[in-house]
Length: 156
Length: 150
Image (cartoon, rainbow over all chains, first blue to last red):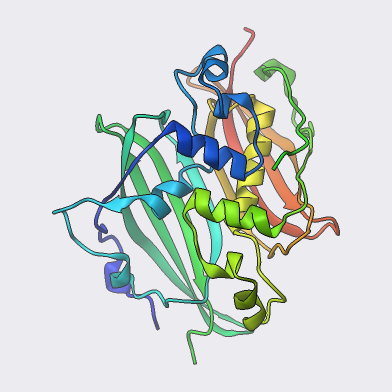
């Protein structure tokens, strides 16, 4: 089996991401959301936000564009033993703990928390669940993300 | 990319009843340019989404959309309903089908629960994204705190 179960509960190297207005506008545009609160600061403030708020799935940028914290190396994603291709995104869940605004620096710590094996039509599947907890520059927890990734063909 | 939205005034807890349907969001057809744009915005440059040959070679009949783009459509739909992301507490989906070029994704939802806890007024809803044939691409739920008139 591919996924390294010894990694369950082990924190990966933290990653950081600086939240910027331009990225929020770009992301909202890319999902077709032209709500002015994601594009114009005055509109956001008129709606009660202190700045452009992050759209609900904006945190996906934290993982893809975030960078490892230098000098804080523990484990990398490679240590999880995931196959390099063929992973399917099964589920994604966000728990929002506090607002995220431009100017914030969020730091995420990701852990593999569960691995399940199932027999399917395509052979043995492995279902890995990852959880990432993000804190901001003040040490406040702002977001928890839980993702499942499905790997098929593990029995070949 | 512009999208037909159903803009709504701020909703209050007292205005919501279990069984209420959320105003649907009909997205524009998913085009290759949208996938390229979403790849750049999100940072997910998996060529399965942006290089037509990769999806063909994998036997998928062409590129498929990022699952997170479909969740993004659902997030837009939820944000439109709530009037913004402020009250959103939890939002989760399960991905159930691949989306190809030119498919039209419609987001719908229904209120499944409402309750008061520790003085906060919460609603829960089930949500789903389907294509023009009614095939489900992603489904899930969200919880949100709403302002109360009381």
